Image (tube, rainbow, N blue to C red; front, side, top):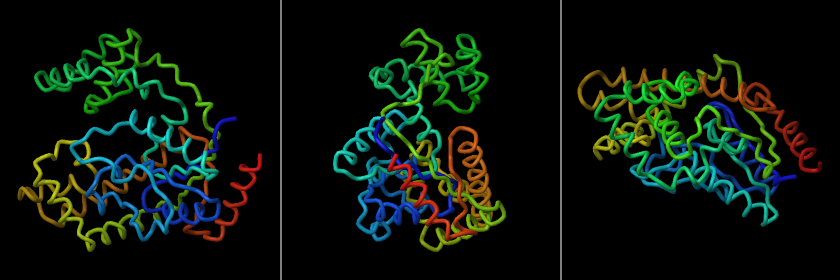
Length: 308
C-alpha cells in the first residue's frame, strides 16, 4: 500500500482552505497546493491564495514558487508533489493536496504518462511546434495532430494549443499516439478524496461575493500590474480575474463589464470544476455551507481511512 494522501477538492468559494487548515491541525498534516495558479508569485488576490495568517503555522508547499514568466505544468506538479508527499510521510505527518485544478490531481493519482520526465527533456520538438503554430495558426497545428492521431485531436479543442503541442510532442518523441497512453492508477499513493460543494444558487452567490471582496482588496491593481509587464499572453496572466481587465485597460469596455465577466467566468469555471470531479474521481461529497456540523463526519471518515 502506498503513502496515504488526503485530497480536498471542489469548486472555487466553497470552503476548501478553511477545512484544510482545521483538518491539518487535527490530523498533524502539511498541505500541498493543487492549484495551477497559486504557484505564481504576486498573483495573490485573483488566485484566492492563502495568507500566512490563514495558514496558522501549517506548512504549505507549491505556493509562490514561480515567477509569472516561468514555465509550470502538470509534469512539474507531478514531480514536485510526489517528492513532497514522500518527505511529509517520512516526518510521520499526513500529506494533504488541496485545490481546484482537477487535471493536476487526476494526473498525479492516475500516473499520467504525459507527466514523465522523458517528455520534458527535449524542448526542441516542443519549440518547433510552437513556432509552427505562430507561423501557420492553431488550426493548421491541430490539423497536423489530426493527421497522426485523429482520436486525440477529437478530444482536444483547436484553441488549446498547449495540449495539441503536447500530443504532437509525445508522438514525435516516442512514436506512440497520445491517445494510446496507458495511464494506470499510481500505486505509490493510497488517496482519500473529500469533495466540498453546495446548492448551485448558493455557490454562485458566494462566488459573486468573493469577487466583490477581491475588488475591495485590490484585484484591479494586481491585474494592472500584470498587464503592465507586457506578458498578458503567458498562461499565468490568463487566469480569471486578470484577463477580463485587459480590454478595460485598453478602453474597449467599461469597468462594470470587466467585473460582470469576472463573476460570469468564475461561475462557469466552478461548474466545470464540479463536472470534472464528479466524472473523473472517486469523491466523497459534503456540503459544509448548508451543514457545517458535517466537519465531524469528515473527521470520522478520515480516521477510519487512516486506521485501515
